[in-house]
Length: 136
Image 1 (tube, rainbow, N blue to C red):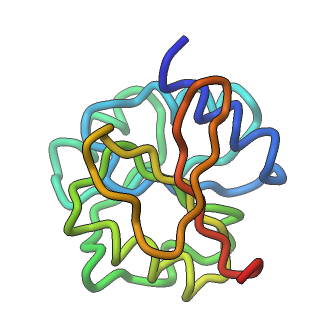
Image 2: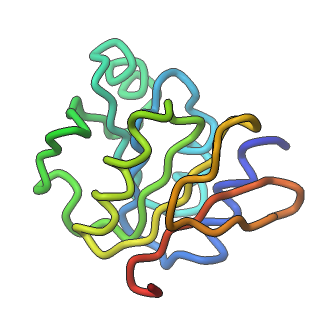
């Protein structure tokens, strides 16, 4: 089991409810695992093909621009996560967490720099950057 461990980390640290994956792309393993664990998953991407791909497997997915997010889509979320986001969308993801006052979990590529304000958590060998606006 690889990146699906992110779902296990979320299950151990975030109460059940709505969870948002930003920039889902075509990697659906974590969203599907979270659904199995009883979470309501909302996948967000700017790419309509990625949104349609997620919908085909039963994931609630919408198109949105993280640089100008429609906050009503995210309301009620217990947490936000992103898998291997491009460096330019990390700051908007963290701002979204700040605006909603919910934790953010980022699974970066190994060579990417740590996002400012996050802390590194080693969860079963998986490096997860966590931002918690409530715990500042």
